[in-house]
Image (tube, rainbow, N blue to C red; front, side, top):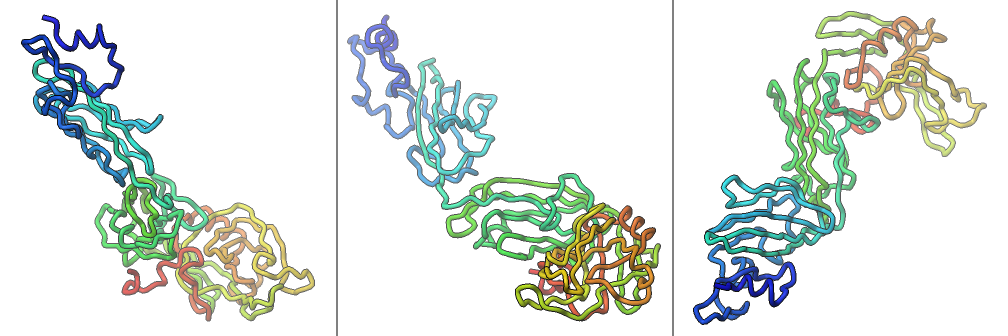
Amino acid sequence: MLNRRTVLASGVGLAAGAAVAGCSSHASGKWTAPGDTAAGNGNGANGSPASSAKLTITPAADTKDVSPADTVTVAIEGGTLESVAVTAGSKTVKGSIAGDQKSWTSSGPMSYGLTYTVAVTGKDGKGTAVNQNSTFTTIKPSGVAGVTFQANPMLGMKDGGTYGVGQPAIVYFSKTVKDRAAAEQAMEVTTEPSVEGRWHWVSGQSAHWRPEKFWAPGTRVTVKTNMLGVNLGNNVYGGGNNSIRFTIGPSRVAIADSNTHMMQVFINGQMVKNIPVSMGKGGSTKGSKGETIDFWTRSGVHVLLTKEPQTVMSSASYGITDKKNPNYYSETIKLACRISLSGEYVHMADWNIPAQGHRNTSHGCVNVGPDNAKWFYNTFGVGDVVEVRNTPKNLPLTDGVGDWNVPWSQWT
């Protein structure tokens, strides 16, 4: 018997992608045209009027503002799936058909502001073809905020890296986050061994996570941000999902005392060095724009930011540009370990050896002699701690990593 599928293929030349792919013949030899029977419901439930199979596509046809983090699914009753394609132009969403061929589930993310087409082919229990197309549209944000992981404002964090006991987990957003609670719900920190910690927003774009006290050496830290589809406020959405892992190294803490002019260095709790230093001389002057510039080393816990074997230090960087000013300088400095954004370093100062251990004469850095500078440079790393004591100026939270100077009760 000549069935309808044969008639359509040979006599009508039905265009590819037509909603009705096949029907069985009637006793009269006539076939029922699409729309002349209630077998198909027109909203994506059935593949064709003559098919006994039922298709369910999620998101439903013509759905708007779908989250790109949502899962796309296709299910069939009374049949099996052969292929599912979810596309938007050249973009294809990854997914797979289950072993029983009864369902398909996406495994890859979607993008913002696109219209996706779901194209499904399958067969019902009698072998009749089931074809269906459906479309939906994802959220169109006013902005998308990317996420990066930082060791500090000057340095990205390396996945798998090792950092000092003072290193917080830092998540930086490329756009201002207005809904911080939504962002925090999408960020997760896990540690081995487990330790309690909290998020604190240093700025509208930077969230820091730390425990109450310095990390225990050997702690393994994993940070995950599941921001795709998260509204961060003002219709700005998170750009994607990311993760990073890092390990805490040995405990290395240096305590520089402005009164004693010495810096005690502790490794894993044991003092291994007592280094003569010269710190900020104090006093102040006016900069080129009339601003007040002082020469105190900031008290408080500093976290080592970067290490530079050689760097140029210039008073012009903070406003003293007049070469006739006695505080003007521009010098190449060796073995420099930076501990603040404002320009404090622990560095070699071979010209200042007579003052080290006796008096403070620097412009704010911690000066040490050549041998001690070499040892310190080779021993300390990013995230290690340099605490400064007994000066009248305190390190602000935002001047590098001033996290540990905020009391735990205020770290929320």
